Image (cartoon, rainbow, N blue to C red; front, side, top):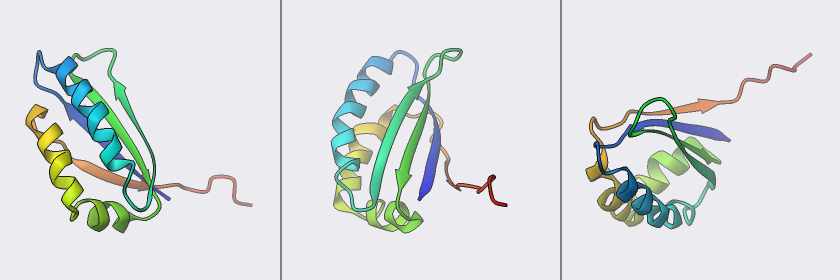
Length: 100
C-alpha cells in the first residue's frame, strides 16, 4: 500500500464550491482499480489550505491507472481550476517501526 499526500491551496473565496466539486469528484477516484480510500482535510490555521490523503494498492495504480485514464480528465475538469499554485503530489510507503 502507498499513501499519496497532496497539500492543496484553493483560490480565496472558492472554498465552498471546491468542497462541493470534490464531493462529486470523490466518486471518480473511488471507482478506480487499486483505490483503497481517501480523505480531504481542511486546515484550521490557513484559509483555503487542504490536505488530500489517498491510499492506493500500488504506485502504478495512481500514476498510470488513474492518471492515464479518461476518468482523470473529468477529475481535472472538476478540481484543477481551483488550485493556485498547482499542488505537488508525493507518495509514501510505510516504515515498519516494530520490526524486531
